[in-house]
Image (cartoon, rainbow, N blue to C red; front, side):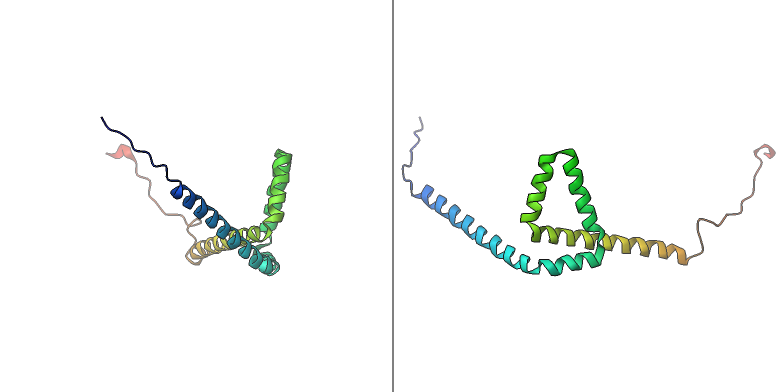
Length: 135
């Protein structure tokens, strides 16, 4: 028969809890520092987003408006999160603006490539009708 020995030493548990607390305090100060830096950069970033693609702001506020129409509590929650996390929201909107700009550039390059060739859609191929009854 196997006997299980129990370890009544609370030291590993205490060390684990202290390490977890230390880790959470470190994350707090890291996020607090990032927030302060991003808050300082936010006005410049807002202007850059407006220059790149102002439609991103309109899309975001339309999305927020749909949240209010669908569920008022969800709309209020997202509004509060947007106000508190304003610098983080601006970096998200910057990413969207840059993505939209890259997609538009790819579309433009794609369509310009085919416009420079002879028009593929308006050309007709000449063909000859073959009667199957001749055989």
